[in-house]
Length: 310
Ligand SMILES: [Zn+2]
Image 1 (cartoon, rainbow, N blue to C red):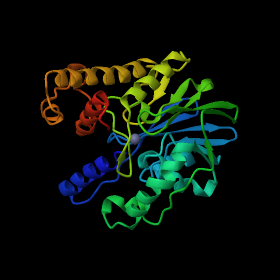
Image 2: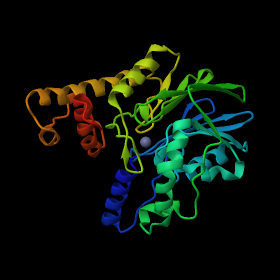
Image 3: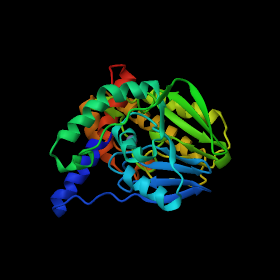
């Protein structure tokens, strides 16, 4: 997902400057040995945890995972032992190739693996063969497939830490997983949480699949666990250190409020085309970045309210 938007942003940069400047990820420490790699353009973030026995990486975009690797190499000589992708979208699950030297074990949900084998593998190959400079990061690379697929939830005991990996169901994508590390009071949310930006419609090789009702339900499910979490780590947008469950509440409120605005327009007899043109973002969300992402969401709110598809 969002590869197209990023491609658009980069192509705009190309027009403006004559060359696409590579996105520089910003590293932030979230807790002892827990690090966040923020994509300042609002595209996908990543994270990693260093343990005595090696490193675990969460999310890897082929265009930026080399920076995650470089950050890890600067901090430790420990090998990357496990990698986990939040969902199958290209901006989260394509970059495992960069870690190949360490031969990590790649864990994903079964439906992510299905998506990777089907749509994403094809899209990866198309981008690899393309001469579009926006796809330069794909040249000579391979889409690495997961080693372990699971349904439900699993626990990984690694380096003295507990990684609770939960398949949360269908929300942003056909299946989103979270990873909770109780010893570090962090939960990696993938694209179930975006901060200070309009959330993205999940997309895998041109197939759109977000489900607002499911997304709200998942946010409720996670909040209802009342976990001791200081920081929920977003898939896109800046991390809010120590803001805890307030981030989940804001994300849920966003969907409820935005959907309600669309519902009011439907009740007033507006068509989807009119909604797309006339929608006014409520005051509390006007500061959110990446408004270009809204277009797909009007359609999503509309179609899911009317039960007419995505
Ligand atoms: Zn994403």
